[in-house]
Image (cartoon, rainbow, N blue to C red; front, side):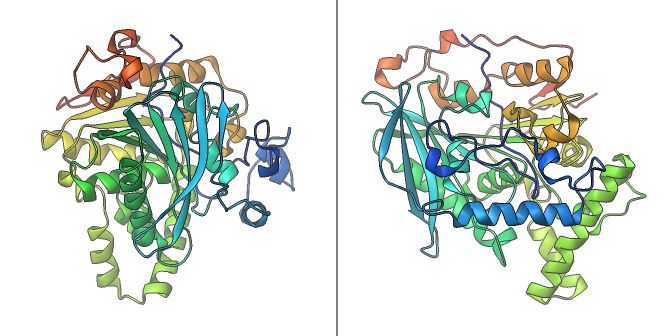
Length: 411
């Protein structure tokens, strides 16, 4: 069996995101360029993506969304390998239709359901959403997911005014409930994985939905505490523990978000602080009652491990069922093992250690496989829509990353 990426998660970050890489299967959706994102958008050649170049990325994303059919699900199914892939949509709480992509095993089921939540901005085009569900040449993690006998639904969420801390959360909750109602799905065996912004939303869903799904995995979850990102003191932990350049970028983005909130919501400073506390995943961590996996990296500049660690420690202190894998060198998004991404492009080729960390992180943890697929039962067969637990062979603890389980404090 190939390395099981099961616990790896979502995507790139903020506004620098890979274009759709699914052109091999759906040319009409658009494809990737041979050039890296850095080569394509670093117009002044300084090795960085500045504000002007970042705006060019956003404009490119809008152009992709405006292509004919880019945001409209076809509703048709196609067979890719041994999977049946269908573009769909579901209604959010206000009736807005949100695009999604379903990848189903062949057979009668009922099948466990794995829900993936992309990172970065909302309003992603279907070509991109497909890379979060169907076998593709961008993410070995997603392709490995498709080798398992479960369904995969890639859901999305909106962007724009009122989305952050608001309707984007409703979109994700609605997507999870939609997944549970699909034909041939075992609604009692559903798990959620997300990374970056998607990891943030996966944890929010866990706080809001209680035991409506079995477990959650979050890769480098973004902004677990918005008070730190938007109002934090650079001279105090945890921000003071972040490398200077990464800290500067994080604080700049946090202040931009704060300014936008103050304009859009018209709240006073005390009201803003109260609002951010109410929407802090870390502050509300005790509401998470299902097994939780964190995948983080000390080499992540966009969602640094030290900013996520306070939430992990809080959940461990509350005796929550928590597992943690922390890579040492890998950049943001390592859990998807992508070869094309903003963070990957800025780092250049993967080092041997980074490549090994991508393979090892998910294999160190059985939490998702056992919980979603079998609920501890080893007698399920693939033919009946279950999982062959005996086929899962984790590598075990490895020296390249640090791992904690249950209530153990990190060293």
